[in-house]
Length: 90
Image: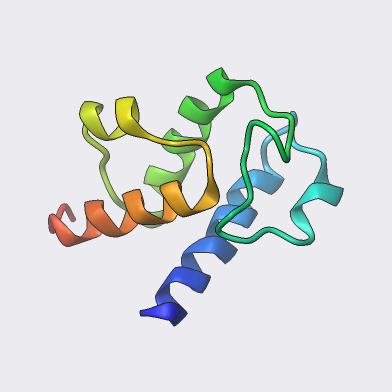
């Protein structure tokens, strides 16, 4: 399970590298505790954009409620991806 979480974080970092508002230097030490808003100075509106890219990257589909409840840490996004995968949306 830990391995899967790390794989998701690695994939998330790949997604973040494509987001122009993210400073690449901030992607060097990303952990589950990393906060997009405070640690990466990302506008909250950018999280929706990232969620869409994450859906494509991991071939999952988030529900509106998932997005509404999404926190701003890497852990929140990893949990959301695992939740979407567990729902079996292929």
